[in-house]
Image (cartoon, rainbow, N blue to C red; front, top):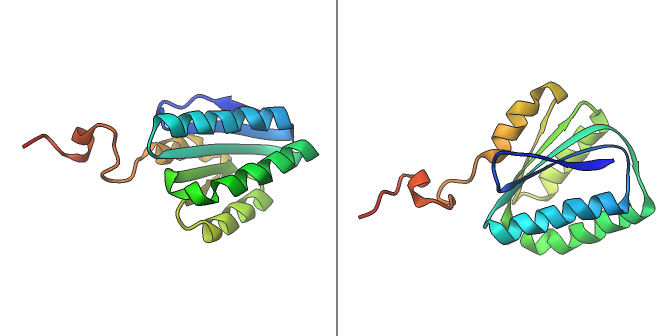
Length: 139
């Protein structure tokens, strides 16, 4: 199961994964990410993983294929918060953080969900869609 969950910041795509993830579920997440990228110059992700067992072959191939298409677009991603109590997911997130330096990736325990959501909502300095949020108030 992979479901999109709501997040108050429009540039954040949040989802919850657990059990078995199918290709259709993964495609809905990809579509949400692409829609956010069309609407915002920089996006962030929150992925809450609870008892993830496996991905179907279709989902796995789709995940790998989409991931490869994003390698040249990593500057569009600011942060990825991974919320999990599964040690193996934490290890994968740490490896990805080392591999993909352009994206800040941080793991949070399951009881730190609110902190993960807040951290992902923060935009890099000087990238707010409203310049006044960066302290600019005109000449």
